[in-house]
Image 1 (cartoon, helix red, strand yellow):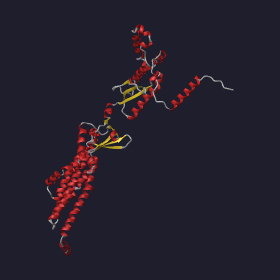
Image 2 (tube, helix red, strand yellow; image 1 turned 120 degrees about the vertical axis):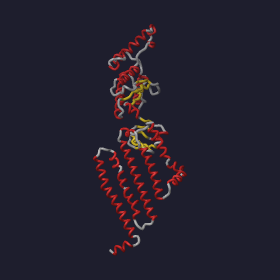
Image 3 (spheres, one colour; image 1 turned 135 degrees about the vertical axis):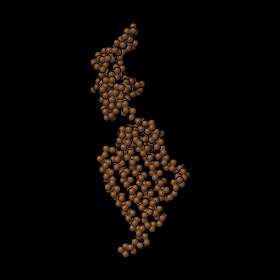
Image 4 (tube, helix red, strand yellow; image 1 turned 180 degrees about the horizontal axis):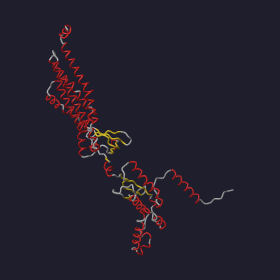
Length: 422
């Protein structure tokens, strides 16, 4: 007992022992909270029907709150340690207070992340992201927490720090330029409903063509169709133009706008035999009789002038084919009949006569859309000879070879016969 009393009477020994006990209690409190209380909280969160507690557990918000207890024990228990200089006690309190502010800020930051997770699971959250707002709130939170920590460690008043920050406003504006631009752009995108997660956007100047997978404070991530990721600064979506295909997806129809280029040399009037053959096509059953009656009535009004073939009206293979294509699209089960549908002839040019099909499929799925479009044009390509029409295409090697062979045959036929000399 005497030796223990002598040991405690040594300078600083009593303070060291009390300080060791204080640190041990703080460590034990942290271990117990993490090992017992947090496990109990997690167990309760799993068994309840609430989702917010599960989100807080995933983001480890309760863990950061548990870390505040040892900091509180040290902050208020350091005064119980005897024989410590006042400056050292104040310094320990300042450090503990700074840690306490840091842990609380981290707990609030993870709670904001949990709130974002819960919002993302809602129907509205799948369309509109609040990540930019959450990130801005976190920036403001940690800026305030940083100021409080600096004041706690230095003992300076926060007013002096804010006055110094005012003098550095130009530097701060430069540092947070992207944050300010991103926040303003995010507000405009959200308020005007210009962009949602899941939208298909096309921005050729930045090589972006795909689905929006994330909208953050500074950037928007787009997964392109080749599975690459393009990161676009948020402010570029305000300053530059881009195409959003959401309207197409909401209407339920995807546009087909493609031309059949008809060889102008194959266009002509229909004779009686061709008319009889085309009359067997059921899609022309309502068109040909009506048009023939209209043309016959017109020609009867010409009188004697109708004896000249050039004065009479006659049906053409191109006009009849255009009517067939229109009837074919109107009766197609995979074409959206609530949207525009027409077949029009564009201005002819060096590549022939363009016949444009303008309609919408009854689906917006990419693979189905391409299949429907291909089936329609496969059918029309194969049916063109029935109307005496040909597609225009630039001559290839086979065409040139066949032309040279025909030219040689004609020259051989036109060459006079020359008997062989003995």
